[in-house]
Amino acid sequence: MEFCDECGSMMKAGEGEDHWVCSSCGFEKGRDKQAEAQMVTTTGQESSEIIDVSDAEDKGLPSTTAQCPECDNDEAYWYMQQIRAADESETRFFVCTECEHKWREDDH
Image 1 (tube, rainbow, N blue to C red):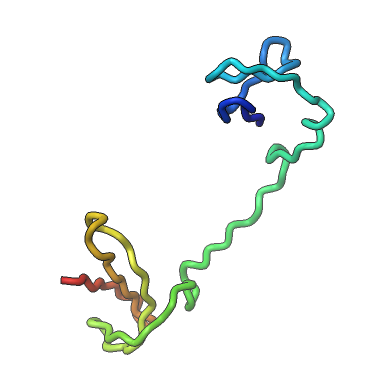
Image 2: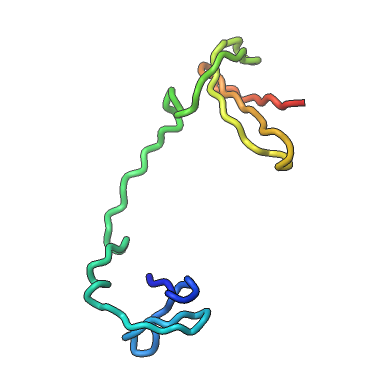
């Protein structure tokens, strides 16, 4: 992938594919086939194994003291998420470390 020196837009191979042409401003420059051959691409790379850790005890979230309304456990993971307008505060979500019940706490 090559970017235009003039405007920063992505360039495409021109006719004959011996030069790059900017689709925005028309700037052209020659291609360096030797340098391009050294570039690393994703073509031919092996895919890595995806490991499902959704059932792991620690979900990578911080924990805090919070009373679960379902099982009365006193510890929960927590995270914050913006679910309303940007000028309103974020909503705190809790997930029980025992029964995985999820609840939220809004600022009023």
